Image (cartoon, rainbow, N blue to C red; front, side, top):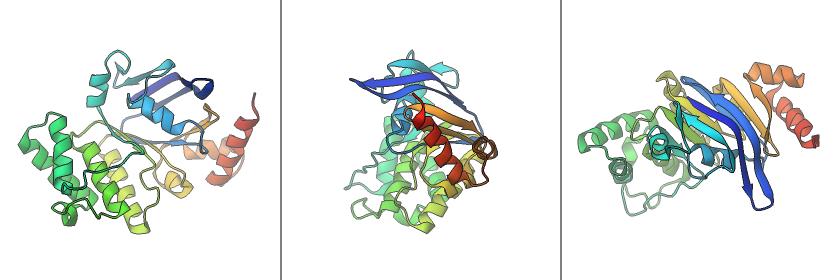
Length: 243
């Protein structure tokens, strides 16, 4: 479980995040939505302990991220917007290297790679060098690296951005399997179809604050419309007019 309370981040005179609060539960997919510049990626980086907040708190499975960031990192698998692979290593070697960094024994890394290859359809890629991978292939390997230590909490920053239809479908199915395994999945996306298909809860952020939160049905009801995309536009527009 991920609990975010009054989270804020300032970069000089710019307030990127201004008091964001939400809870992402176990066995559920929570979508973090917002226009470009709304503070989504900054929020995810603070949750992942990549950025220190200016104010507020993050707790992961009850562990305070500021007090014990290493313990929090052990409990999360994060895919950030930086997805570079080591080009001269194979997919298997890229994943194994991250397992070694996590301190996993060789046998466990081998089992993890087998399980992840099955979930993400990686078998044809495992012994190919990453140099020359398509964007979708690179994304699958990057997600496998993030999951190699079987974390109970998974953070994905726009995992399907720019992918083809078949790869997108594959990754959506992987997210469903993570939910079925009881993981807490927190992800950002601009694709309303994806959000409607996957999310149990939605948190809409606009101008660094939470504009709305709830189930997809509750979000549509709050906006007074039946379409999730239209609800998003109405709710983020209302937030933008606030002082």
